[in-house]
Length: 234
Image (cartoon, rainbow, N blue to C red; front, side):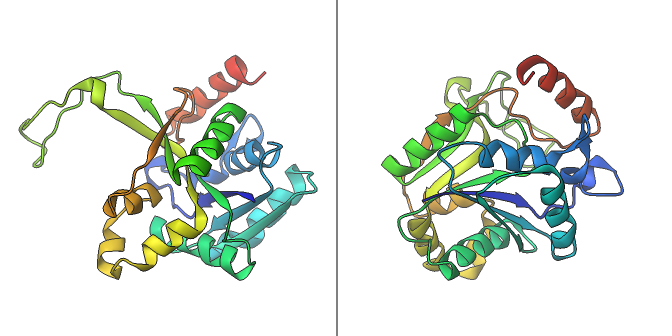
């Protein structure tokens, strides 16, 4: 089974809006709905799990009823305080539904609404072959390393540096077992599922992303998103 997990527990504080950024609208459609639709419309995806803050479960359920028409199951569940906790809530839900074994789970930021069918399909192939993958694009700008934020310590070769996007996709059972092997303290230090694999020295394959697969973070990103829809999705 191929399961999309749309992670939407963030508060979006950098956007400076009254509601989290995943619920803002782009040309009349909420960001989170665009992200869910990208997966639910893909013929290779069997199910979608949407993980949100507890007080948004009813709200998101109503948004889905209003905007999405599909025979596929879409479950809205409670996420956690951190991204790691939210990821764990998805895996535990899959285990409770007896779908964890033999499943691929594609974890995706709800505020990254422009994932394509090609990216989704490439993630599925890579996760099935390697057990873990991350969508990435090559770095265009030079990257600087500074631990104190004041002085440059090193400049890595730009050819070896990538910007991470999502989806990140995994053999769901393997990801869950690797997490359970970790101490709570170590797990809390990590930011995502790929970090779990690298912590255990497991390989993570790179899937090529798209530069327009942006993450809605700041107010200017809404206008940029509108331009992307007009250029690439009309």
